[in-house]
Length: 389
Image (tube, rainbow, N blue to C red; front, side):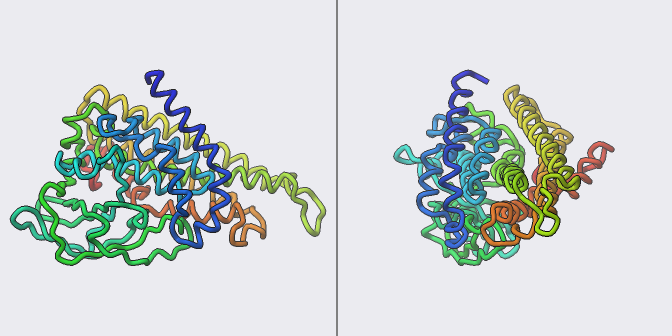
């Protein structure tokens, strides 16, 4: 990695760590609002995470998908919802660079990176190709950050695969459905549209970009655009989950170090089962970080070399990310099991990161059972049966 890139990332990581106390102080407000406070939005924008995978030609810093993960996990130790939104905006800016040149001209204006939400579930959506574009109707859920975004990408199925429609947020209706246990501040509400015309230049066949082919991959030097879409899309959400597991270890250690049993009078830190849970959690997180970092390094090396990726590589990379997510989830549940009665209260540090992390673990990208099966199939010479690998 060139020295200038390393320096830029180190500076961003330093700034992200410095934001943790302020983000942590706003967590209760973030939950109550069910969206980010404006101060947290400004923190994200000033930090620069939105542009870390965006080509420099479009105003980004092009630091790669690994930078989304590294910066995001630092933010998540302050507020997971803030990290979730920042990470989503980052990878969505990469998606923006895959659209047509005309669409990019609308998105990247006045030196400002676009803030884009996505809502990909096509279950209640339909689209009709018409002269000059398409007319799309439907209701889509899980549009994270929609209340702060300028654009949203909604999806509908066609005979040729999933079709992405790039739409100004002003042209759709937001339905505030996001009332959840965790990640409340992500504001991942529903959006709806009826017979909305989307011009052809704002349409994108996701099957093509799923293979790492797009207008942006041909035009710009960034290696991230040469990777299949599914390989980079989970970087931000994984960061939120892993950041929660790191925050859980810190919160648990701080509380347990000075805690005394109410009946026994014994220091809780001397209990073997507590020591076991903490030691195992720390080992698991170290394994998660090592695996994620090596996986992203492999991705970057293959993209830089211009290699044609095999199905086996693509499945293995996704499997590794899912395994990391499963282990990080186990850290949260393991520590919460011995976290004591105080972790039942709203706003308790361990309770907060447990709720947020468990919510993050439900994202479809972390379907570890499916990905383990797909990986096994690929190793045995069968089709893995995984969509958008």
